[in-house]
Amino acid sequence: MPGHNRTYALLAGIILLLMGIILTGCMAASNTLPADEAFALSASALSGSESYEFDGEVSLLDPGGLVGSRAAYEGEVSLHGNLKMRWKTKESNPVTSDSVKSKPISTTAYRPLQLLEYIKAKSAVISYAEQPVPAQPVRLRIQIDENVATERVAAGLREDFKLLLADGELRKGNPDKANQILSDADQRLETALTTLKVKTVCQWTANPNGWFPSQLTEETVLSYTWDGKPFQEKRISETNFLLKAQDGTMIKSNK
Image (cartoon, rainbow, N blue to C red; front, side, top):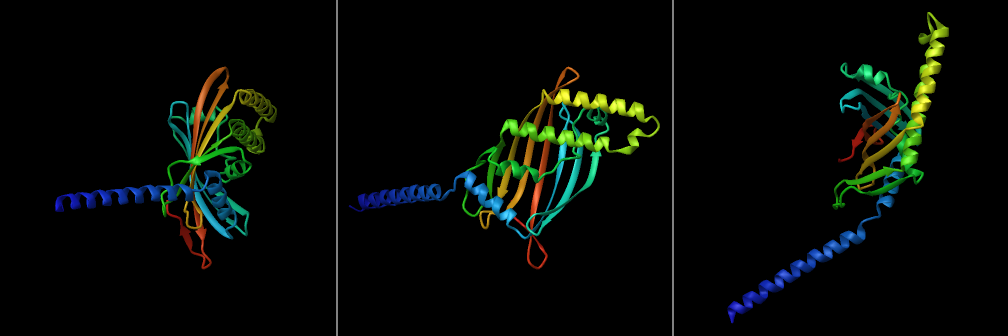
């Protein structure tokens, strides 16, 4: 019966197709590394590189959601750890710059690669941001432990204040008055830091062919009380990595 034969052949083809899909899915699942192992491979590819460059930008959003300031940076890591970094530009939104200056949030001491040290110290939960696809960039979601994230930001703000204290221009004219103002500001900062809570979530993108990373993004939300009033601000950064080839040219990983 030709009709039945065609039907059986069609059903057999569908079954084989479904089996192929199921087997492919199982193979993909079995070949997917745990997210923390994938990050470890990628972090090792970065730290094991003889030389690479990076560039990026960090923005601070005020409590109203407006960009209070934005700064671009670039740098190079050579000889497996010799870091050189410089700030390229820094600009403030004229609408919000006054409010930003009145609060202890700045980018002066920000170090984009410092995040890696906290993640490597097992102070983060690492998961896949999306299911990995063969031969496509791998994206990992990294959530820093809240206590560690808070300590990191607090340390950065204290470092910012130390840089401010070292600025001799502030003490010209009336050094005694300037010292009193700085002392009061230090006390207000420390009071605010006792209320500080920070949440930091990152995304790490890497090329599974060699695992060299292409990008690290950070979103940090800061909640604190300043002069008795609650505030919430956000810091967003994006760092791009470029691997230097043996001939000195830069190799950009696919994002």
